[in-house]
Image: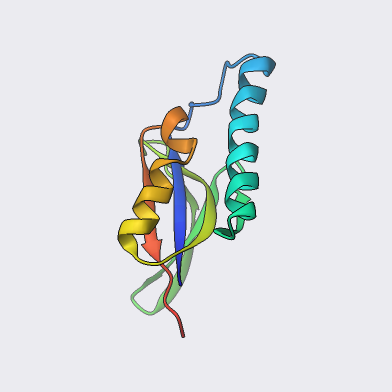
Amino acid sequence: MKSFALLLNHAPDRYQGLSEADYMDIIKDYVGWVEEMTERGIYKGGHKLMDEAGKTVTRVNGNTEVHDSPFAELAEVLGGLMIIEAENYDAALEIAKSHPHMKHNISMDIREIHDV
């Protein structure tokens, strides 16, 4: 089996203005999916990232600089990540299509994790 990271992107304001009931319905969808994938031995872990800006570390002319990120003009933010196992990319894509993130948002990035 191979490991894949599901990178959960969303619009910066995607969850603002939702009623508590609507927000909890979304959370229930995610929890239910995680429980099902865990029972099937597919889900290996994940984390919700904080909503506030993070930091970007860059090297410019040999010096290290730290900047706030993401920048306000970004159309998406990385809201979280999950690790799954699948036989190959095609299988990982089918698993990703079943993820509630694709019901409640527009996109997700899938990256194979290098096995070292």
